[in-house]
Length: 266
Image (cartoon, rainbow, N blue to C red; front, side):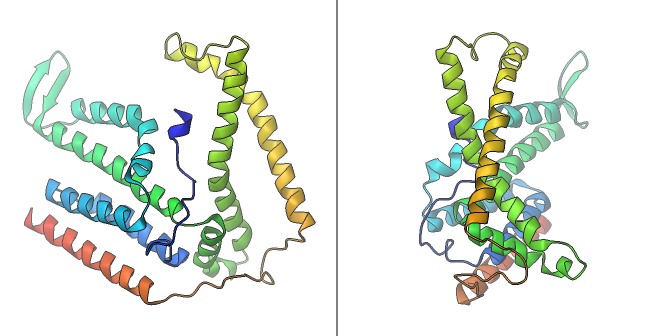
């Protein structure tokens, strides 16, 4: 299960999506997330599915790798769907005691499932096609206006990118600790959900120790390389907005207008 979590991983490549400016990708990703919540009918979600699939194809990231990130959230998606299925009022189709299945509940449950799936796909594709360094620079440039207010924009951007970068590392460390404890007789598979949760408690201490050790090693490595963030920091590759970024913005704008028109038609 831990190996299925792909958030924070970077898939190297030289596709059109990879070459886009990191700040533009962050803005377009935010627009994409807003569009997901603006859709009001299944025609819009069909258009969104086609747009997402097209984006994945031109990014050259394997579709199986992208869909793999949804697997750890399956139980959460199912739970959310069931919750909305029976908690939404409207035209009753089936009733058993206090449980009511409505026509509106079915539509809303499907909408919620699709929203979660597309949210995961959109945010995951951002980290798959953007290196940690480029992501840090993009976040820092977005936060530049806040720097005039005295906020440490570079430090905030660095913390967010390091947090994303360390997700796969900590998951790999957790998997190693689990296998080591299973070799010593620990059982993480049998029992109900509560017992499984209790069995994971012994993982916390070695995992926290490992996380603090890695953080200390990272700090020492940055100090040894005389790393200094902030205003005087120079970059090996300066980010520039080019024609590919303009094309991507126009394409997403047209897609947003198409979603709005589909909503009105529906």
